[in-house]
Length: 93
Image (cartoon, rainbow, N blue to C red; front, side, top):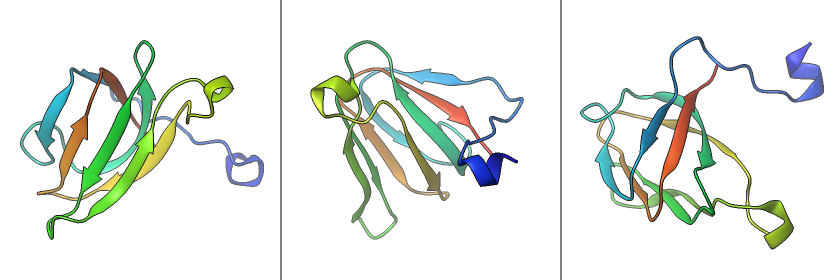
């Protein structure tokens, strides 16, 4: 039913909160599919592939401000996550 309604199913793994900074997939957190949500006001959020190009480039925050309240994406080992403010990553199916 979730695929019909467009809802994302969260995994049973605990979400992880990251402070502003850069993180390496496979070292700082495992590769996989995640839902990113802002902690606080939100800010710029990026995922860079192994070739250095941005595969995710969005602003997390309030939809009332024209930002994304959440963003679902895939990561692979060696990708780089860069966040300008705290962000929570929730593992999803």
